[in-house]
Length: 293
Ligand SMILES: [Mg+2]
Image (cartoon, rainbow, N blue to C red; front, side):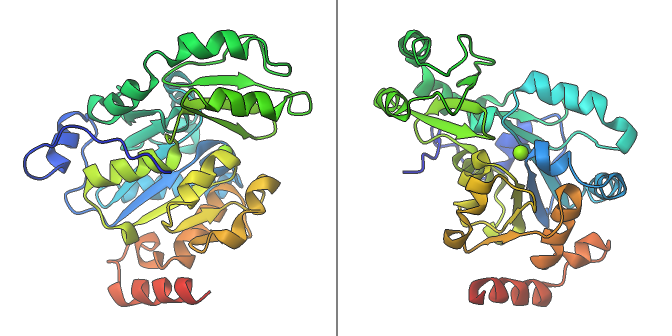
């Protein structure tokens, strides 16, 4: 089941409520929401392609909403942004971090109460129950690496007992192994996909205006939403094995930023890449070929 965080109903249009909690200015009429994982995706690929895509994101900021979607926590996202200006990576409009458990303004990196409130509610009381049990599981590092509405550990996947993880899930959490060495313990149903869908409700954009990109198992939930998605060439093998059941996901031949650009072309966003107005007819044809692929 996909959990979609919901708050108390708010009157009128939703986007102004989101904008009120954001320092980053959202485009009045966005033409694309580009949602990129960081490691192995936006931070990967040949340097000329990285420079090109980062510059394009700055140039098209008035019509392309950029969202980071990462397993990192906000402190770690801040370190990435501090380290990358030489290649030209600018802060995005929004950040989904902690594998979907945090949503923040891309400029201030301040968490957005409207988005994390419902997740906070699900998480309350769980760490107290889970921490003592996790400390006893062989193959799990004794201390969590981070703990923002989730617990994140380094693990030895050879030594870990999957049955013990299943027992933990009975407490209302999902255990997510990815990258061959990460374990995330998340509130049940919360992941990069569920949090993105909730955010798109606030942004009030149509599903065909969204492209997601990723390379590891914690990106699978984004691909399972059915939104147009691009899987990097050098993705985690367990993720690639899922491709046959992901009809809206295209596997790029290239890696990192070059793969993201390839995905944008594949899904009919060439005009945007070339700085021209988006041609509705071209996009519709791309959408039809996606369905018949
Ligand atoms: Mg990644």
